[in-house]
Length: 184
Image 1 (cartoon, rainbow, N blue to C red):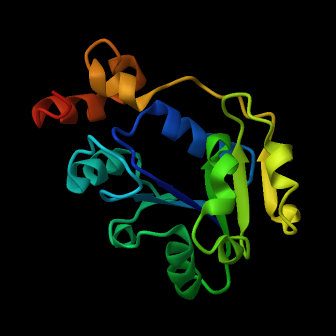
Image 2: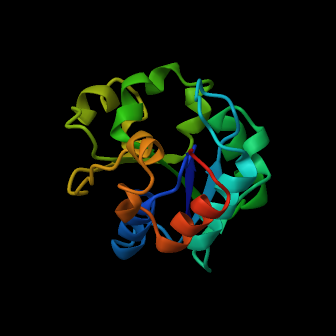
């Protein structure tokens, strides 16, 4: 089985995140995706409590999308992948990242361990992905989705104007945000 690992702040989770997952399923890249919202590291500010981000993600959970709320205690991606590989020894793991992450990917902690797995890179911001991937000797471990049509959705813009940007949110997530007075 091909299992995607989708780590992010998901602050808030929006239709762009769902679009990514649907694209990967619809084009047979993955059989299952484990979604892991991060805690308060990675220099992220304005994160609502992890329990709210997990609850919002659960609106997307199904037999193919699993929301993982215990691996977010790990600060580094390689640690998450190591745990998931121990739990899924007979499956292939695929880390899902946006192209904006490839520019500094070489600085990630224990990047060699991460590259024991496949890395799916989603086209974003017109970044020259090949230029960065070609610097790695494991460049065959990268799957570059050049045909992925990016959608321009900013979590920051959503947070700054929930009502005006609600079209980028699943209706149930929008209701959840409003009921909990998040991003006010």
